[in-house]
Image (cartoon, rainbow, N blue to C red):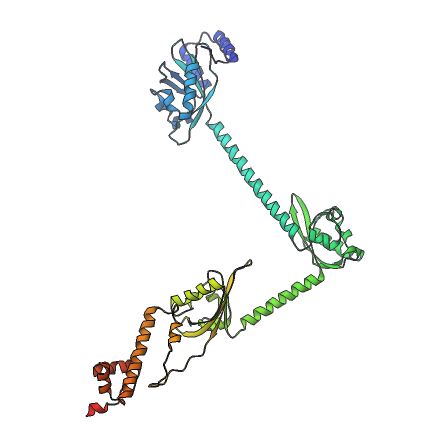
Length: 483
């Protein structure tokens, strides 16, 4: 059999044998135990007969339970071929090459051990020397986790830099990045290059003051001096060189990579005026909407109130906007839950709703007939829904005994989807009963006994229904009754 023992190890053992020859078996065992983390004695059947542990940490790994068990059964499946190779290669007078195996551990994490073996006599027991690699494995795992964390941080930094570069290049506002110590331009975006009238490569490296007209030199030097001293500087108007016109200069200080830089933002006067006009127009539009006599409310796509004007607060009987902000609009809208659902479904389908009749319920029980117009603004950075609620005048109650119907069939069918069918049937039944009673009283010239007989009701039943619907003079006595 060809031995896999290392030549250097063989020479070292020969030298030790000559110098340590007088050592007895006990001293040799102590020496082996002190020089290794663990040592095993394996018999010819591959069973562990003796075990010595040089480290107290191995006691928690369940190593004492290895005694009397085959060595190959104490390791994981993938390590068993290595154990077989160690037993096969072990020979007298030679040490096998080191092999790393993983032992099964009750802690749930495999115990890595590096082994070398030597047969004590031909076909005799095998001495196995082991080194605990748990500390090394922990260091390797920590190193791998640290490397992965660095990779993730690097990717995040690259992503952030990419987003910054993209925003910087595509931004419509002219921006210059200037070194605070030297006033040299270190970066410029295309908008600033177009405004200044020079190529980007001709701007980078130039003194920022040289990009402006000489008349603005003193103001710009004061701006940079104020930034260095206080970190702040007021905006100023300056003229660009080569007659490129005047700009508004705003400066802010920031630190990056242990260096201080200045962010110069340039804006043409007409742009400043346009933005101010737009802001004034926006404020004016908000004032108009807030002072509308009709209720106006803005919600998010989930129909939670974002803003409401005083007219809407009057409709819902609340005092402040904070009381409605964040609340679902259906809290007050619609007499029935299906009524509000029909409105929102139509708005989601068409994006626009006009002249939707419904009711608004106040916080203290008041009910107001309103007509709703709504629009959905889903596109843009702030999707929202807008609602206007216009109070509709109350219809006059029909005159008792009149021929005019209190509600037409068309008006009743308009309630489908806004009022439950149960309520519609009940209201329709009440309408028919009232019309029949009024017709019977009219035909019998207010003879209630004859009217009750005509309707198939008892006299008391007719009186009850007349009292329910408020028909006739219930205190007056029937002519037929007196007869």
